Amino acid sequence: MGGWSFVACLALVFRSSVPHFSRVTTKEAVELLEKFRAGGVGRDAVVRAFQAAPVADLGFAQVDLHRALRKGFPEVIFGAGKTAEQVLKIASKLLQHERRVLVTRITPEHARALRKKFKDAIHHRSARCITVDPKPLPKRPGAIAIVCAGTSDLPVAEEAAVTAEIMGNHVERIADVGVAGLHRLLGRLETIQKANVIVVAAGMEGALPSVVAGLVSRPVIAVPTSIGYGASFGGLAALLGMLNSCGSGVMVVNIDNGFGAGYAASQINALAQA
Image (tube, rainbow, N blue to C red; front, side):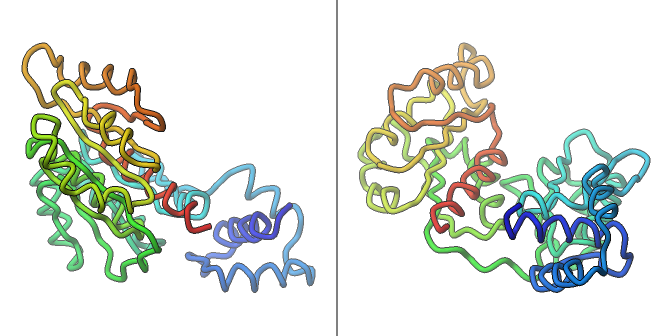
């Protein structure tokens, strides 16, 4: 077992078996590793921690309190379909253990409840997100370019941007550079080419990711949006066009899934610095 896996194991143990260790930092995890080696923590406790990762049972939700330990970022709340009270209770539980929280696909009711409860809550209206992040993560080197074809695609692109930013990335926003006026894209090409990873959101026929992929040596995450007229079928036409892209290095997420694209872009950008 590698050193960091071992440290993560011990963090799991202490977060589930020692109440006052509600948040284990890297420094604390290393200290706990030394205690394990000294015989302060038994093997059975380690086994139990892996058999049942700790969650907070709210009745209507099972809140994953170790998501950050496994993934590097806390559980993200998907607001759609949840009441304001449910979102508030989940966010409150997460913030008892974590330093930040992201809520996506919020309603005005969600926003009002969260902003009333948390003074550091920021409502990103275009992105339909709320972030609570009083001490933002330091920005890692390199950038993520978030490119959208048209102004109508901005809500999806902004969801990707807000997600990437709260995860500790520098984001370059490039809006309204669709293929109907290709010169607009070429005017921002230098910025796009400098990014470690590029997210491209487009509706209609979904051609922009293929064009971008042919101009850069970086991975491109394509996000089909539901913008378009009747035969776009709510983004299906863009999705199929992106899945059939002739551009190399194009990955595709689900229709309107800006969050998924921003999260994946953050993971790729982190690897670029490894």
